[in-house]
Length: 174
Image (cartoon, rainbow, N blue to C red; front, side, top):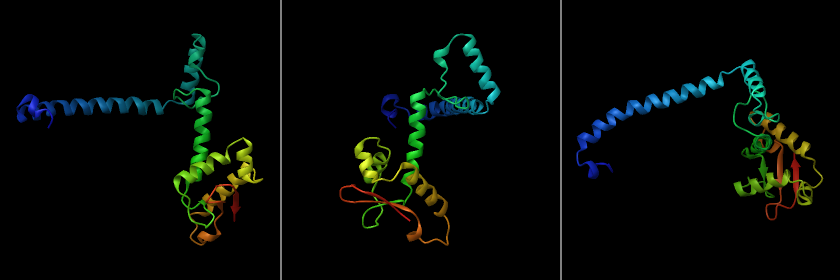
């Protein structure tokens, strides 16, 4: 519609769009083909690529912290952070983190709770109230296992209970 005042002819615009749509579709399909072919690279081809890079002395393109099965341009720090974030995202399941009155936490409270769980400082340690991260992760694993079980009521599922006012305390409720 913005081209009508510029070109002055709706028929011309329709003609141009009819020509450009197949070109755009072909371009998108070509990009999709390249992407999906890259997903089909097997481990042997990846190792061969790694050997070639090593032989060409292009060590800056190789990274030992990134698994050989990952062909994304990650460096070691990005890989570790992405693994940590993927682990932390599991905590955002509905009903797992609850406030002091057993009502579900809102997103900002959940974010602060998860950040404090994995905080290595004394503030994080005080927040965990003596619970180790492994125990908290175990309760999340139990929640994920039991969440879809129709025989178990919501009250029986493990949860993380935090003080809804100051987020001062963390308790695992089973």
